Image (cartoon, rainbow, N blue to C red):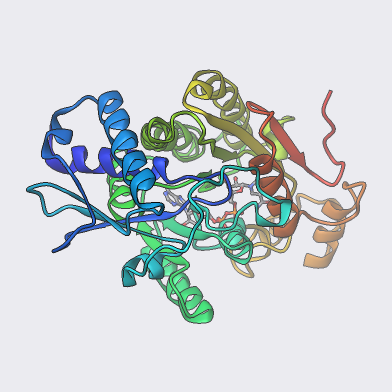
Length: 385
Ligand SMILES: NC(=O)c1ccc[n+]([C@@H]2O[C@H](COP(=O)([O-])OP(=O)(O)OC[C@H]3O[C@@H](n4cnc5c(N)ncnc54)[C@H](O)[C@@H]3O)[C@@H](O)[C@H]2O)c1
């Protein structure tokens, strides 16, 4: 097995150990000169299950003996080390960890995201960018993973400056490419050991009549909106399962797919998108059944139309402009007529907003007794049977 892969597996197991029920501590991986706790290099030859039990036993003994966590952990004869902190920057500065060792309790509602590490694909704009901001406002750290590398990195820099500490990282990813997603997950493991929440948000839309749509366009939509969720869950769940081994089953993490109200009912001349979003819910239910044994919950969110977002409101390519030009809304003469038409379909009379989606995310993470569900956030436009 390649060395990097083994190290990242160990990093995830160690991070899992340090989950204490309130927030996950950051485990930063890097080379170190000195160490407080030395793990034997034979660790690298053990199976994951054996490694997890060795790591737990060794750290437990350290804590029992000294009454505090080790401030750093080193693997013998390697350049690999782990330092701990309540924040990324704290870990970097290698400050002693000010934390009780015996606390395993449930989080208070207001602290549900505090210290948690999330990955948001498609986080450079639209719903994804709003979710990134929302998670950071709730006290979390976020990987902004997007094909738009510059957009993601500018956004991460802006957030880190605003918060005067590291609250965001940017990563390039193409969610429809296995190699790219695998690399992204390895980079995450080598930076913070793992994460707590994966929001599979990246998505594309190409509308068109079934009589006219090219197979290429159909497959493009499917490859991002449907296959992309499979690929992301495949690699994300491998890492999360390792954390769970480290925590001995007390660690519960989340994968959330962004489906849509078009994943709950058909969408006229938009079959590729609606089909992929329906399919996402099928994957969500199936993955949930399998992954609960790794303490991973898998749920979907089904937002209504995000009328203020770029997909709808972009002045050149947005759906308002497209629908006005295509006369899709009978009698509409202005962009505002098109908007009013879509608002009038919603019982709550407005488009879906980021804060509506954020409430659903916080609910899913806080709720420890639900998995495989599709949570509607549609203003009443689509109701569950
Ligand atoms: N906008 C809506 O009205 C609406 C409604 C319901 C659900 N959704 C869903 O919410 C999610 C976000 O929608 P949005 O409107 O914010 O989209 P958006 O087009 O504004 O942003 C999508 C982001 O995903 C990135 N992206 C696209 N393809 C990618 C790929 N292959 N790999 C990595 N990144 C990729 C883009 O660069 C962009 O930053 C999508 O899954 C969408 O289907 C949107």
